Amino acid sequence: MSRLRRVLATAAEEVRIPRQSGSYVLTVDSPAVDLHRFRGLVGQARAADDSHAAVLFAQALALWRGDAFGDLDAPWFNVLRESWHRERLAAEPDLKLPRCPVSR
Image (cartoon, rainbow, N blue to C red):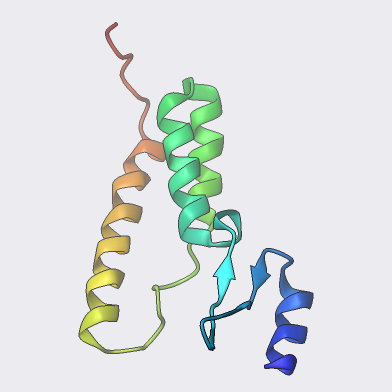
């Protein structure tokens, strides 16, 4: 456990492994997780004006580096992989196409 803590300490300060109820719990702050950053950037982009939205969508999509979970093949991983793939695909057209103004 001490080696794992040392490795994670150099990787990100947002990662901790506290001991709780006789076991260890890996805790990570949301901004350290690409999926959370992706969702946050997409949400900001959809609320931003067109010039800033394109930058935010590009930043969000740049977080994707291949398929989630790599080559792991298990039902749980496969369902999440497909769900997250659909989220990414839903954001791609927003980056490429001008958005229509929203009626207020």
